[in-house]
Length: 143
Image: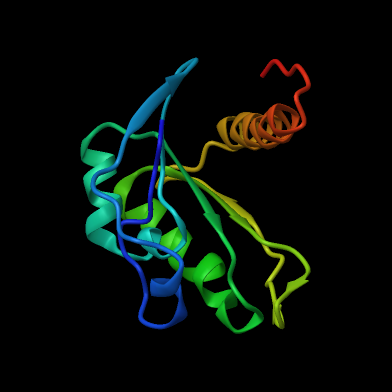
């Protein structure tokens, strides 16, 4: 699967990214999963589209600065509630090129909270990140 940002915010990101087209779902065990990259998850229409395609879980890698804490704390729970999906919103940590990242990641549930499912998703997402790191460093990994 190859996913690109659908929406690129005004500013410097246009120097590094070009917009992609479409959202793709994949299935892992009982979950239909999709990825929206950073800014893409802020649009209700984009999340509504992937929910209509059958997504259960939306993975969102992001690199928000410290002044954007409301996005993960307020907006992602709202998007999950509006569309009946789970969100795993993973933010960057540390500082790079003068930008200090927020370092806050959240996992939020759908309208009817299912904490067991959230624990499963958190475990899956953690293992997925470990697996991606392992592949980068040419090590074996099983989720």
